[in-house]
Amino acid sequence: MKTLSVQLSENGYEILLGKDILHKFTSLCKKSSLPKRMFFIIDENVLRIHKKYLQTNLFDEKKDLVCKLPAGEKSKSFKQISELLKVMLENKLGRDTLVVSIGGGVTGDAVGFAASIFMRGIPVVHIPTTLLAAVDSSIGGKTGINFNNTKNSIGSFYQPKFVLIDTTFFSTLPEKEIICGVGEIIKYAFLTGQDFYDSVLAALPLFYQKDFSKTVHLISASINVKTEVVSSDEKETGLRKILNFGHTFAHSFESELHFKIKHGEAVTAGIICALYLSHEKGFITEEQLKKFLYLPKQIPLSATLKKLDKEKLYRVMLSDKKNRDGKIKFVLLKNIGEILLDVEAEKVEVFNAFDRMFKSI
Image (cartoon, rainbow, N blue to C red; front, side):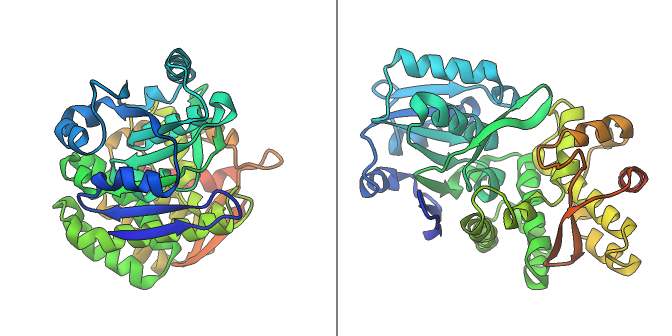
């Protein structure tokens, strides 16, 4: 088991990573002096697939307060948050209750948001069950829901008490979910350096084979990148913006496809667009572009992306919460490990990036 930490001026916490470590949950709660009363909120698919493992190591459905959350992006809505808050009120939960989120990024985002606003904040712990949530959304305290067909437009920064990542859950993930997580790991490869980039490229077959014993070091390294960035910039005022590489494009794809595309696939397509835009802006050469595209192009992308309307995508991007003064702010690349923040681009340059990505599918 590996222990990593998010070091903040207030509310820092540990991230535990390993295989078959769910049984350590109780001792971790005692170590952190967390409330004994617990409210478990779990993705319905996770409960169905891992019921025996969960009931052996975490909760008893007959005795404990367990709430199932519908799978999919529809759970990131005011309607679902309202349902959760209603259950919390009906069961007289308070600040002496620990909320435990068990599921992927959707579950963590929605449950974290509910915990952040209920009674002005009650403690929450995340147990991510997807590769994507493990390396990304469970860490850093970003919570949120989608609103008016805009990704994560309503939310809060609310740090968990700890994060427990048990790779046992990853063994049952379908290939699309593996691809989803690999999309974010590819992002970290561009943010760090050539060695990590090369390691991710070499390990792609192992991820698809679900050989997490041989890829756990890359999962750990990805988590470490995020913890270091979050520790330096909790509220995304500067350095943390690098984590949005590819995401301005990705969120427009998700919104226009009504969240029927996996986040990691959208991020991969977004990274490809960001690379093309980096080339359009003259930040990277043609030779660099070909080299950098090789890794994200190993990920299969849905042909549905080609049918999207560029004008509609651009309008979605204009409403991105990272924008300033009505201008879209992009995170672009100068080299592996050399990221450019708050870059503005002409509409024609953005459209060219879209066109080049569509043609590459």
